[in-house]
Length: 263
Ligand SMILES: Cc1ncc(COP(=O)(O)O)c(C=O)c1O
Image 1: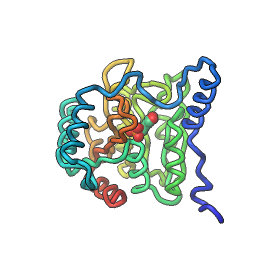
Image 2: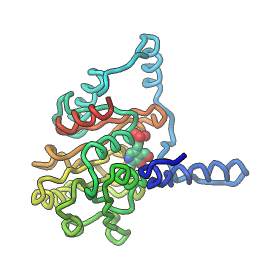
Image 3: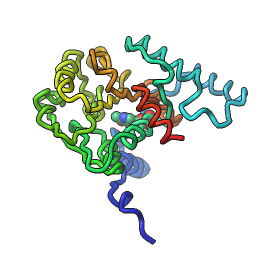
């Protein structure tokens, strides 16, 4: 009774293990501040709850289209325009069961055996495991407190090899809270210009939990939208972690690939 090599390679989520530990300590009456899972400190807003009640009453309870209902994809297009100044079409949007599945879909769709994926550290622990699950190799680029937890263009350039397939950017960052400014993203984009085959996964799930100023997306920089996959969802912004709704906004060929996988 053997497990697959793929599963054996996988380390269980360190975040969930920490969360479990904190629950155990709390149960023993110990005063614990749990900084593990990114659970907002408010509840899902009432208007959203009311809309969900209505959706259940209206029988929105059957199989939905694989990429998400057209009205939902349109609402995401409208959000990207309104909040991020980005033009997408519904065909460039794919909804999934949380941003976690969105990230995993993209990695499974574009990363193959031996492909390298650059991940700045400290990082959300799931990224490396997902890359390993796809038979790829995480390439970790450290960015300590001395550089505000942000990598420099020189570090990015040095990490790129002919095998580099993707780069994962998380801004605002889990776990550090670091936020890349528009000009910092522009400087990274200058490096990507020299390497046109690298796809950027821009995880923007913490867009609205930002303590340093306005949010910038690397997709806003000239030439980047065509090779960027924006990852976002409602978990953090609207305290809907248990609802499991995430999405990608990406070039159509990537959306089609993820749709195929998800289907
Ligand atoms: C950086 C990052 N990306 C994505 C996710 C996944 O969010 P979701 O609840 O939409 O799956 C998390 C959740 O903790 C996260 O920290």
